Image (cartoon, rainbow, N blue to C red; front, top):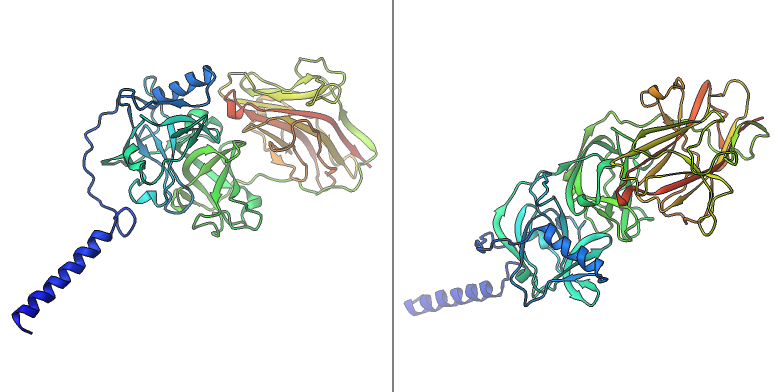
Length: 479
């Protein structure tokens, strides 16, 4: 090959390489550009400032708060806590204003969701990445129950589009190591929404251990599994997208720690935890904390001879349930089971029993209503029936429990062994609030010894945990 040919060949190679290089956008193909220039931005507003503008807008009758383009430049700073790498988040970036679970009165720990019509955001906005949000031209509102930022469109919020989102979400060179807030499920509040949290000593409910995260035929858009605390009776829903790359993986069988983003489900009906990947779960303790069960199934007919019954008609409306052998114990907070009567859509059954922590201001509400002792050896064929209803129970919870060893004193309620009666139906949050639901005829005939049956309520004064339950027509019978 002569010198001219060699020069032409080299020129051709360089031309091709230049052409290939010019066609690659490193935000779309291959590895992202790892060099991030300091944007030289100083945040001049806090998350609380932005949320306060929204709350003021709502107070003024508006549905969103718009930060106008002609206002003075307004920037907030935060850290990315979500990742769409595994497909469990979609077209959004969630940021919080702290690298850990700390908070203070000046700038309390808060989180915001930013709606972006782009996939693969994890390549440039990875977990821990510090970002600045230019708020001018954006709006804040609530979508699916959580604070959300996007483009204003009338009274709603639209996604940022691909051609513009980098102008509003500006990367900083810092990628912080985030420390989730370690919190009990029952202590979560609205202030924890859109933030990274961690539950200690938790597990998936025993009835769901054969399921995948979200790969079952019945899973529509999302799989919903129950996370339960081994430290208390609290539960929360684990929400996994049916587009997640781990959707067909079996849920973890043991107990341990789990971290994720605390948020609300699509319909704003339930509190949920969304993980970035299965690496967020460390269930390494094989010793599960499942409760004991008294499960004889359902009987075909109610036994004819009454042992214990209450329809609450003799109770004084507005007062705590008393007499008839009941133990009405307030473990935490100020609310107990009380008699009430009501007409209209959400009517009582004459006089009924009600429990709820709405407007209680309780940091935690735990209340028990416990029957007198039932000796299952004194007769045969025992059955148990009751009815329940709810008034938007939200994240609050009503449980049906039994104890084979409680001594009947309030001092020993929490130290006694309490198991579950799984055959009974208790009203669910998504049941119609105006209806009463039968428990089914719960068969107790396989049990032995003396037991107490309890209804236990767990809630708080927080808006997402302050629901109400109603109870009536209780009857324990035998052959």
